[in-house]
Amino acid sequence: MDLLQLLIIGILGLAVVVAGTVFLARRRALPPATKPELPARPTAEPTAPPAEPGETPASELPAVPALERPEAPATRMARLRRRLAGSNNPLARGLLSILSSDRLDAEAWDDFEATLITSDLGVGPTQQLTEALRHELAIDGVSDQALARQILRTELLKLVDPDLDRELKVDGADGKPGVVLVVGVNGTGKTTTIGKIARVLVAENKTVVLGAADTFRAAAADQLQTWGDRVGVPTVRGPEGGDPAAVAYQAVQRGLDDGADVVVVDTAGRLHTKTGLMDELGKIKRVIEKLAPVTEVLLLIDATTGQNGLIQARVFADVVQITGIVLSKLDGSAKGGIVVQVQRELGVPVKLIGLGEGVDDLVPFEAEAFVDALLSE
Image: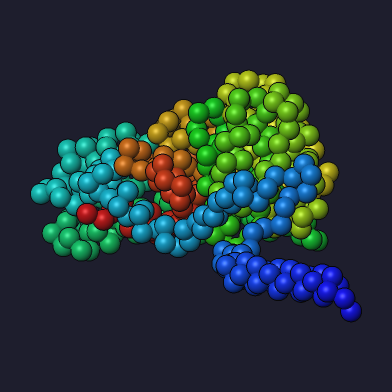
């Protein structure tokens, strides 16, 4: 091998050594390779699945309000004594006045009679009660307060008549719901009272359907539906100004389809002097009974209207067969005697009484509780 070849081989070897040195130097200068970190797993609760097209996302749905649990009917009676106590009620004050008299002379009895008559007890019942008390108290008078009070209670209870059947007829037969038709004049609070009746029935664990057959008064159906929604009761309604008999029919049909226990039908308030509207009540009842018997027809009377309420009651009783009375506003402002008068006038019992504006202020009427409340101090 000549000198030239050796020189070329040496140069190539030197180049390889230099290149290797440079590569190692650069490698040492680079930072060590690191494994990329994965993002941390989220710790939040899983979200709801996405909504289908056209569906409202779950996050935007309104919260479902909790249904109200109405007060049990038995506990409502505790308020009766407070509302009708002697210091608050004109009839109660009149009854108790005879017990506080020093002498039971003719003047005292005349004052007693006058007070009872102005308390809507009526002339006949007042005379009956006065004669009975004059006979019973003729000897001992009121010297024995306990005995006199017991005599007064006994005679008053006879007038109120505890033997009348006051049970609300809400049970149907043959798998059909009971049907309650509620009637009355304008302004007596009929729709509100029907809402309270629904609460009473729900508190007794009955399933209820409401029929908004008052199609003439603006927002009547809305008002009734609001009452029903609060206790989870469906309301059947029709167009404003529509045929009320058709709505009543649909409500009973809904009750049949749902297997409900009771259907309560609201009707438009009407003046007893309006013959056409009164005849319409008869039509509503006839249409309902194509599906199921009407088990209860309740006439709502404002207890503060006195004799005018009795006139109204007579006309309604002539059009539809009234089976029970609901007295609204029978609190401290009412005179109370109308309970006796309206029962005598119509021959049907007072079944429910309204004691105030509260949602649970509708109470099943009990003769003994009513009398005891009137005679309480």
